[in-house]
Length: 186
Length: 186
DNA sequence: CCCTCATGTAAACAATGTCAACATCTCTCA
DNA sequence: TGAGAGATGTTGACATTGTTTACATGAGGG
Image 1 (cartoon, chains in turn cyan, yellow, blue, red):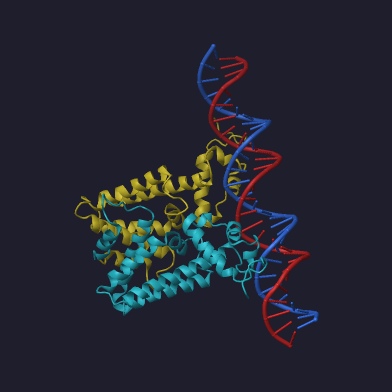
Image 2 (tube, each protein chain N blue to C red):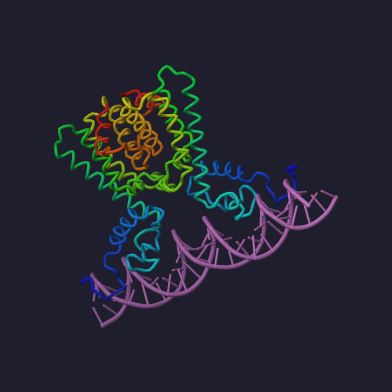
């Protein structure tokens, strides 16, 4: 190992480095601005190197989305295990705030470009994330299923509309307060 | 004019033809599969011809999204002016069904690729569409604003989750029935 | 110690969006 | 009527991108 300072050939941990750099570029430039060549250059490696770790650009994006779902899942579990007074509301707020503070990553997770059919890894990651949601929200999905789905839809839609700048804030209005109000309105 | 049958030079109404063909390709192949060259070929015109009518591919997509918002708006007005028993529910259902039956167009309308900043046309079309929504839903956005926003978020989120195949139908469950149930759960 | 395999490089390809230079048609106006 | 002139379409080229193939390098096990 030794992460030698002047051996430009073997990076040592390229896959991880690519993912990290990609996340940064993604948040800064958006998915469209995330080119394989730029990414490779950012990591200091040749244009073809990423192909040793990802089959294609789509695979790279998929990997990013997967880590996105993992982080999302972690955020959800964290707030759930903090035993908040109103679990639904707390998780809803976390949901939306996650979307807002990881805008492009969140968009990527639900990007139509990554059809979850034929991409088992992504589907599994997404399902896992939403399973923890389901687990916390509705103890039994039998009786509360519809309500849980409705809450999910509301929170998800709110995230996207805010992300899109479609919901306009009023003068001096606080985003977080608005989120809380909307989530609270059952 | 005379739309002569064998004058391949001037198409006559290329812009419209491009948009129509693009809509078809979009629904069939998705946004990623909508290439300018393929589109041009589909209309029987050279690869550079579209540039006489659209500044760039993005501009073409924007135009598509704009017509999407117009159709959406029209659908909303239609159901509203049919004086349904429960206007909110009826419009919600129409909202979701529009998304489901124009999947890729709907996704395009909210695509992050078309940032609505710096794209005044799109923003105006979107605002116009949602204004008719607001107009019908909340007579006064002062008191009912939060509830209206919540309903909007729920319906929008439901659309996207369904589009993504994230909400799984149970055996023998009807999509429309599920939509009605979720919308009805206030 | 060597040789094998994972990992990185270099050079090339096809496809795409885009542009510049040229061709063709339509329409206005003297 | 009959020429420009401006709009619309074509051809050919360019830069960029994702991707592949053939080669180089080096770490680690037998």
